[in-house]
Length: 563
Image 1: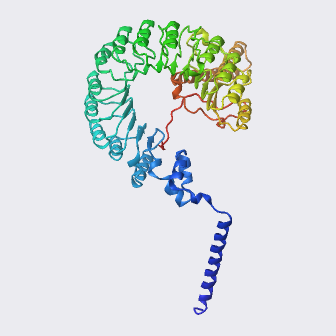
Image 2: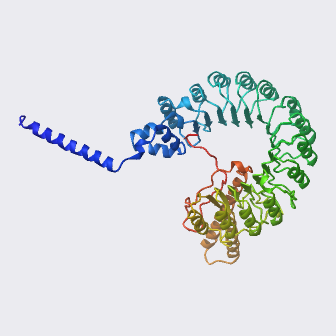
Image 3: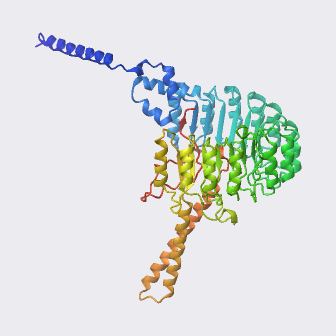
């Protein structure tokens, strides 16, 4: 048998040769042009893929695996709360073994399981780091020394909550030569001394003074002449004189936030306009003592203004926009008028003043109707993001001009979807009365996609639906109470009615707590409005009722993300 085994081998070789010849012939007849692409071009295409997509593509072939795990695609390391400790350790080991940590330029750590040793390990192995974000984590002296020694290109430090010390800030000030921006929002255990170290010894252009006192701002003002951006939000003790002392030193300011500064009046805003004529981004949200007079001066005198936030502004109607003879030359691209009493007249003037508008937020503006919104869709064709939802923030606040449902109908949705080719994000309020339902919006969206335009990520806020459910529960309580007044034949009926009352009361409490949670999650800055939930996320049985998305502005965190 051994003598005849060679015949079988020769036969197998002949078959394999025939297969190779057939494959070569087929390749000549149907060439695979993808193999002709260079690796650089494939990497450029893969740069637009998300992390799950990259992981799936890497499984298709060896070449795709090499390209998908190329270090140039892994520039951001993000660890969120939904990651377990084991996953964090395995992800770090995998990135270190493939030399991907060495190319990371931004770190976003928002996980309670992350230990200080893990932070130090990441900082040690990321020499190209430019930005670090720590959420409710500590910045120790050891970590500060490692940032200075191992990350010479560090430009931004962002801390939201957590703890650090004046010594850590001094180390960063003396060692991080390229540091340009530092955010210390709600950070504990730091004083004005540490902030002075930062301001004196670095070329900072942005520092978050959120919640700072008037005395501290006067102390720091002489060292802030080079600042271009400043956040003074929630500084309840900041007066007009304190703001004036700051703006006289900071002539180069282009962005300033005075959100919820309760003591700032028209006088302080006028001084700000006079001292900082180059302002491009101004936030006056919830400034209770600022009137429409300041708004008119802002629109008339700040010729470089691109972003204006006037949310929760009292008695803003009527807004008198300046008559702009060169309409196409205006710079305003973002405006937030949420929770104000603006009406169709104000929005009509806006269409004449800001035809380059890209971001418009009219959340809970119940006096705005289809008349003005059709003009917006007709004249402002560069719109990218629009918010016309009925948010939960004003529930129970007692503001009369924000009560009632939104008055826009499906006609507004049609004009926005079919007249604005760049539109990407839209927030609406569910209303069967106005024919704004999941099905109707999807039909309009299909008509848009038939033109070859971009898909729109939209969300339907079900505030009205939830409001009806609350009233139904209250009606059930009333009916049960009436039944309890009648003399029943069985005591069991009384017990059942009492149990129903308790259940309905609990439902009311749950709905109220949900309303409060939605109120706390509100973020008035339109630039931070990330992708609302897509239309295919419905989990309800009724096709006309979309998925309830209580947080219109979710956090944009993924486990490991490419830039």
